[in-house]
Length: 233
Image 1 (cartoon, rainbow, N blue to C red):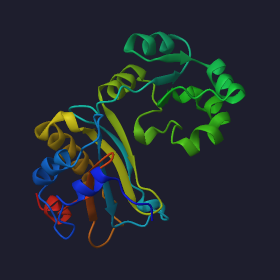
Image 2 (cartoon, rainbow, N blue to C red):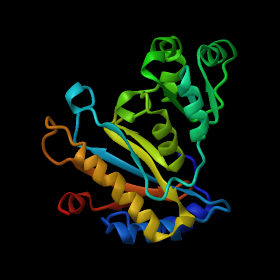
Image 3 (tube, helix red, strand yellow):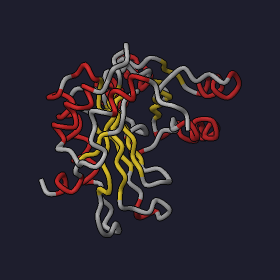
Image 4 (tube, rainbow, N blue to C red):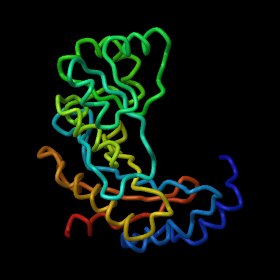
């Protein structure tokens, strides 16, 4: 295993690996352990008591964080007619129809973070599914990125909307902001994500749902949170 840097080792000494922290305590600690020279992102990792191999135990959705993520996301809208003007007015970075699909397909263009498409364009977007899918960029109704209400979709994304989706290891990874946000804003973003995950609990999920909850800064150590207490709120 690669040797950890000096800053990481110093930060790791501040964390009790055997302790399950209270959320506020963990958020305060994650700020103390962030020693990089840039404004580190605070990441939340939640292991769920679901089996993602089963369709009825998939956990996927999107939520607007009250304080955003601290990152400006480039939005591509694939639509036609009046929806192109609506997307532009809402602040989309790139707007177009079939020509955008062709650009991605023929030039490998991927200078965007989120794709929003109207339902009537999904047949065209499907042509680049093999390109967008593996990168997590394929529009999906469950995350609100396949919609005729492109104005709301674009504004939500720009305001700090994040998508969450359980991976093969039953873990959800999602950013909850930057270290510079401070404890109060990070806690509000944290609560918003946790509430969304609890509401999204599949009926088929049995036993303990929030198996483990961990937060960390980009370069810092993981800090474990008492997941059971979050279920009891």
